[in-house]
Length: 538
Image (cartoon, rainbow, N blue to C red; front, top):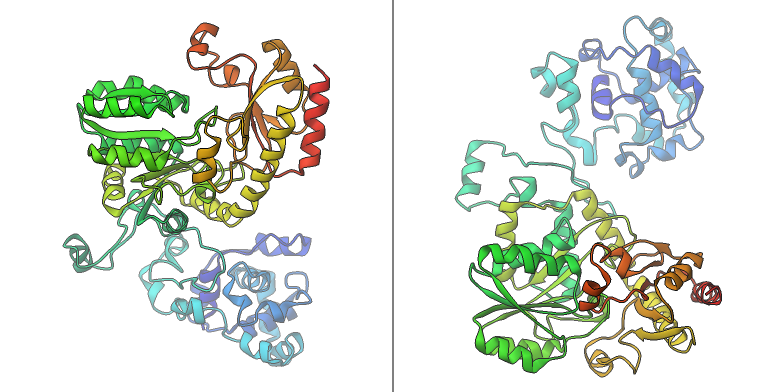
């Protein structure tokens, strides 16, 4: 293989090894490809030349040969290869060239000394560019001949004429691209006329994102899933796609405030009206279905922040009799604790930012259901946007690998915390579906396998007392959101409703002493001790 192939394939020298000797290579790097175009150098020859010319520029790490074994050399960040390439990038004025030329007759001996004659060492010669990178072999002799400038080579080498597919990596690769190309116009026409498939454009799909969607579909038992940039993006997209202009929806009194704002202020601009009912009031639902041409019933279960539960099976039966769809926001439940689709819902929605991502480091939302319904939402998504970045999709995939472990811990800790708080004299009441005192406790036991990691409660005191309690805590962060590894606590009156006066807040049941506590995966005994010392402080 030509020496230029090595350089063009792997790029400039890596500076990740903090060796001052390597800095010398950078000062003499000239990026001159013409020097290598007609000089075919094997990796073995390159190793030998520069091992002789300067020990300051090329140093073999102890495990160099192993690093270049059949498996390791598939990793393009391999430090051994990077150092070989660092040496080969010196320009014509490099002082190392003359040393290399003077040592030409000693190349084979030097290579033999530098690289032991093992099976891995035998694979070293000419190894770069083979197997998963085989498509790049001979690059300097043919494919880059269309380029006269290093700038063009830097842009296209290793990519423009095909690349190896990393299909033996354990983790899903992140595909950072905004568009997908067609090799020729005939391929484009095949795609346009539906004889071939392609994502075509980044807003329409991404290989990394598809993996996240398929994982969520598998958990929910859904035909299809659309994952988007946030939970609110999923909610609003779903409502806009499935509720026609002039349509009517039914929702519940207790829900995420931004969802309520969208329903009350944005949807009316399209002539869409809404009926709001108590989560347990099935008579009110029946009246709403009879008196209105209801397109959709949409609520959370459990709800935010009082963790009310909706009888998903009953609601679905009632709505379907009247031709209405049912969408359940299952964010507080997670796909592990509750299977809304199997209970009869048409769609289930999540803010994947919460438990699904699970690490407080990514925003995402998803909606799952039948292929027909999800496709309708997806088509609107292709127009409006809100695509999930593939790096964020990777974080969702990563987070889901520990979802069951996290949720098990959070279910257990939250139930124990709810019982602890309910028995404490400085707590007025606790809202948690796992407690017999919860109004939908029996329903929750029927349709959930776990009760989630969020506990809401009221401190026996006013807003000042509640603030003192929260400020006395050492472990939980005062922040919005929930479902992550770290515990989070907030006063909804301040965090979510502070723009309203006290009377307006009370219309939604939001008292000044209400606290929402998202249990993380810390040890329960640590959380217990922290809560008790904070209660002792008030």
